[in-house]
Image (cartoon, rainbow over all chains, first blue to last red; front, side, top):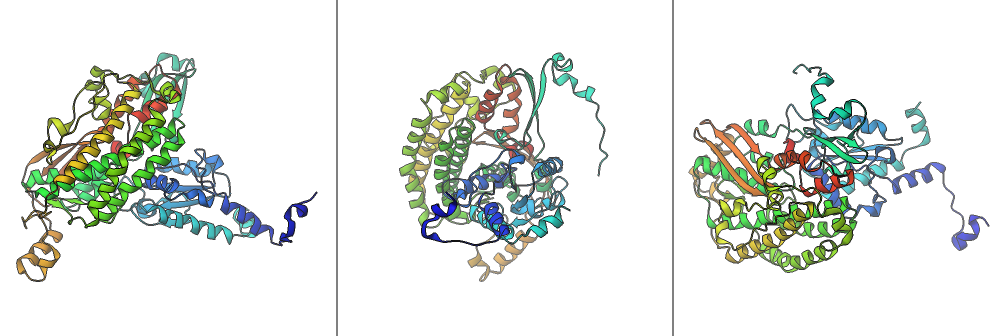
Amino acid sequence: MGVEQKLGNMGVVTTTLESVVNWGRTNAMWPMLFGLACCAIEMMSAQSSAYDMSRFGMELMRASPRQSDLMIVAGRVSKKMGPVLRRLYDQMPEPKWVLAMGDCASCGGVFNNYAIYQGVDEVVPVDVFVAGCPPRPEALIHGVMTIHEKVKGESFKQYAEKYK
Amino acid sequence: MSQIEEVSLDKFKHLVSERALTGETMLLNMGPQHPSTHGVLRLLLELDGEIIVNCIPDVGYLHTGIEKNMEAKTYQKAEVMTDRLDYMNTIGNNLAYVMAVEKLVDLDVPVRAQGLRVILTELQRIASHLVWLGTSGLDLAAMSMFLYCFREREQILDIFELVSGQRMMTTYFRPGGVWRDVPVEFEKAVRDFIKIFPKRVDEYESLLTKNPLFLDRMLGIGKLSKEVALSYGVTGPTLRASGVDWDLRKVRPYIGYEQYDFNVPVLTEGDTYARYLVRVQELRESMKIVEQALNKLPLGPVRSENRKFVPPPRSEIGVSMESLIHHFKLWTEGFPAPKASIYNAVESPRGELGLLLEGDGGPKPLRVHLRTPSFDNLAVLSQIVKGHLVADLVAILSSIDIVLGDIDR
């Protein structure tokens, strides 16, 4: 009554544990429901029927940081929001990734002033930056796919060293 | 960097009731990261069981310094900042700004540009109301509303992309007209939208208006009386749902709204359901304006010929010395505006969006200040949620339709 009976004629697939784990991580990467400004509306568009991000296993936006893997920083981060953002990031369980969506989150964008962090990488480590003001939903999906490519290349050894 | 001052807790004691200090009621933070605050709003709630005793909004999590940034830019360049202000109503913000600049320097606008402005502003109003309808449906667990509303919104964004090259931050309106004439496909795109949209509004209404689950969450919740609304300076659909017939498009017509035949929906109940009905009616009324404006749209220039304020078209620069000089002067220095102060208000999807522009004789504004509708509408929240359940707060908050970029700016 093992799995081999259910497989039929598919035969046997051999793989490494790393690639199975990474495959699982890329196909169920739950983003945190965390909209800050204009980009949040485009993030919602990416979730909606026209672009449908659920094709990539991302239909589930979690409101709680404790249940999410990916933080999409969608919008400008003000000096008042920075500590909150960091706290949310710290609450996310490992492994976690951050995507800086839009120019404001990437480099401050048009707002070079006292109120806005000039790039969210001053607050949290960022994996992928997506340019645009705001980026089109396709650009956001491309950014997420880039994170998927990154995750697929990760090894247990890297994890072990990261969290030593 | 200014010194951060330590503030003692005693300073804030007056915000909550006596019972909170004895531990009889509970203090709960809702936000700044919460799915139903529609952005980064923090609400400090004082709860007696599940009943709200006090609600204290804490704004500023999205403070961007837009007003200050605009003062550092020339009149042409400051316009891009207004896009990012209320990001559901980018075109309406542009309109408020360019109209203020036109008033300040006394600039004429061609008739065709006025017609295009009306069409695009009303399409933007529909897009904004669609986002509101989708997200408030989502808050009340009507998930399909979100998917339907965003389907139609994409169509509007495609029209914006057609005319300006950008989906959201268009900066299509410029002082003295619009950026350039619309492409030939524009009329067909808008006509297609006019054709399908009324049926789609019927579809939304059939899902929500008489849905008993929806009515249970909405009817009689968050009653806002006429007097309270007026004393707090509430504007827009929230005010009109409380029985005040006040729409700037009717009472102080601008960009030619007086030529179009449309109604301003007004209801007297003042509850969450009335606010919902007013906005859904506005979807239909805006559609009527778009259709009339498109039928009336004349041919002709779309930008003023006043070369002191409006850059010449590219084709002229190669053949005319004056045009080259004007182009160079306008994009390096900008144009000077007289020493005067102008307040210009337009009806945004949320209410009265006013812009105060003060010129000092130079190419940059001395002071820009915005009167944003969401800020005043949010102020009334603490008055209308008292005595309701926490779950009702979600419905009330989505019904007053705030945008945090508009509040914090």
